[in-house]
Image (cartoon, rainbow, N blue to C red; front, side, top):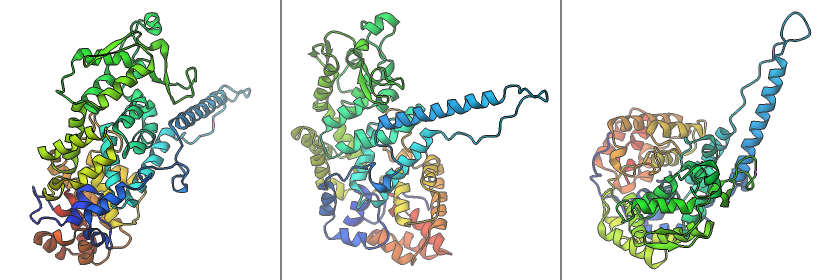
Length: 483
């Protein structure tokens, strides 16, 4: 069932709460519970303490390693075990004393790649958190910020292994905190530093630069200004990028040998830092090691251009591809007034009249669609999280693997192709076939879409030849796919 440009029936407020802000309804009376006070329902979730966190010490997350440093140590140990096995196998293949010929090494199972196991465990924890969330607005915020400050698991094994930990350590603790704190946590994190090659950036006049003849890598500085804070066209110049890159030299990750610190942790290497003062956006920052770039990050976190850039992205994500100017202006004003308090901004977003009056025209991103689908279907057969990860790859949004530092597109056009909708239909059918318990189609329709169901959708489902087909059609309905 192809999704039209807009839903012809205005959605009720409960559906807006669950689709525009949340992760979709689950079978039962969730729509009914929300209907009495949709805004209050969302605000109650935002006000909960520690709601964003995925604690590794929780028995449900038993497979998670508790830090990026622990991940690095686990990878190093796996490499040492593999090296020892390879050496033993090489010895076994040497010619034996028996003149009959060389001894044959016994066949050994392939050594599992530790980073793939870590990635799978992190993905499972991520999906479990999303499936349990009620109504899921906070998890949507986690997804927004994780995409805003993205790293890619395709970069290298170390990033693949630490992408989930990056989200847990640098994003989740700050989603309802201060933007400046999140910015500092993100830019200090080893996954971001490695993803944007800052371990390769050396001050030309530093001790290491003079000795090795190496210089700056501007990737991190450029993406902080262009994507993470100020935004394109905000007035910074190439000279600002170069100067900021100077300030960020020495920000790196301790390697396996542990010469600079505990392997896998953030370290500042003064021997690689460009000495002296630096200028950014017309302000001079005295030389001072790591504190020089930290001061600059705190300043640009509070820059008016940063407030506008973040407000515009939030309004685009939650309201419309062409965000209402009044909504953007109000979000930017709250960002500035509260010193980037993200809880206040989330509450303001809930109160925006445009968020409740605009039609649900944005198509769910693949990640949001897979989560909404799994919430709607409930417990089902299937190898998780591999099944969900496979669906995301097929839909073009592999988990923690954006095509570039600007993250996955938030525009409907990026996901509304004929091929993309066909893939969604295939996945909807797979999910329906694997569902453990499919209830009455009319009851399921009422609990997932409610009063917003169109006559066309109701008719299509009523004509289904089986419960599985009716569920698949519901999962492809415009009312289900739009937010």
